[in-house]
Image (cartoon, rainbow, N blue to C red; front, side, top):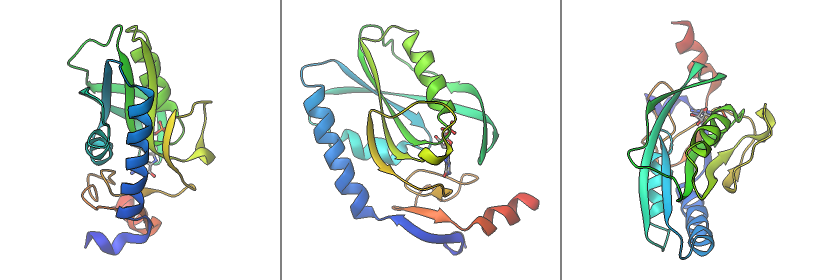
Length: 184
Ligand code: 5GP
C-alpha cells in the first residue's frame, strides 16, 4: 500500500496551512495595486497553488506551465522541456512563479530565463520547499515556505512515479521503496 512506503511526515497539514497563509498575506501586501499573474508549475505545485491563491487577498490572474526535466527524479539533467506553455501573454505584467521544490535549481533557472525573455514588468518566485544542500546554480526563491534537508519527499501535490500526490502532508519517502521499484 502507498502509505507503507512513507518513512516520516516532514510537514503536517496544519504546518503547511499556517505557512501558506503567511505567504499569501506577504504577497498581498507586496503586490497591492499591481497586475499580478500567478504561474503554477504543473503538476507538483497544484496543492500549494490552489491553497495559496485563496490566501492572496488581491485580485490575481492565474496561468500554468508544465515542464519535464530529462533524467530520473533524483538526478535532474538541467535540460527542461515545455509540455504546456502559458495561455496568456505576460509582457508588462508582474509575474510570480509558483513552484513546488527548488532542488538543484536548474529547472527554476530555465523557467526564469524563459519567462524573462517575454519582458514581464517583474518576475519573482514563490516555492513551497527548498533543498539548499543540492543546489548546482546560485538561485533562490523570493518567497519560501520551508527549507528542508536533502530527503526525497512526496505528498501535497508532489509525486513519486505519479503516486502520493493526494497526501495532505509532505512526507519523506522510504528510500528502499523507490530503489526496489527502480530495479523492477
Ligand atoms: P531542480 O531542477 O531544482 O533540481 O528540480 C526541481 C524539480 O525536481 C521539482 O520541481 C520537483 O519536481 C523535482 N524534485 C526535486 N526534489 C524532489 C523531491 O524530494 N521529491 C520529488 N518528488 N520531486 C523532487
